Length: 193
Image (cartoon, rainbow, N blue to C red):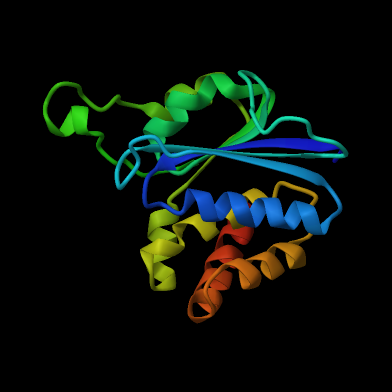
């Protein structure tokens, strides 16, 4: 892997920023130049959040342009659809099969789009869908949804699994490390099952 551009997209409160920091920290451990970018906007809880991780021999900008993302890691289905134009041809789309209704839908102004996953798969063969929320519940805490998704993403990348676990140990508060490692392992092994 010479370089990788990863776009993480979701909703405030899903752990997107921590996930991008874990991915970035792992890349640093592997001697990559890394740039992170975070856009919080109106993302207190429930608003759109994106973060980008760019890694390579030398990275000059943290911004991922349209059709430049090698991987889009969507923490919510509508966010996958919203950011799909940033995925490069042949790139990988990883989607958490979860619906979080935006304010425009809850107020009745808009409706939540139907068949998002099938619409994306019709145009992007390299799409993986996972119910990360269900797996996080099975692990014992829905807040580890982000590490389930990091684990799945790690299974498609060359960066070492042990380095990712080390990043989790370094960046996650100690009392939550073991449950996050459990969630990571479940995500990592998902594509193999």
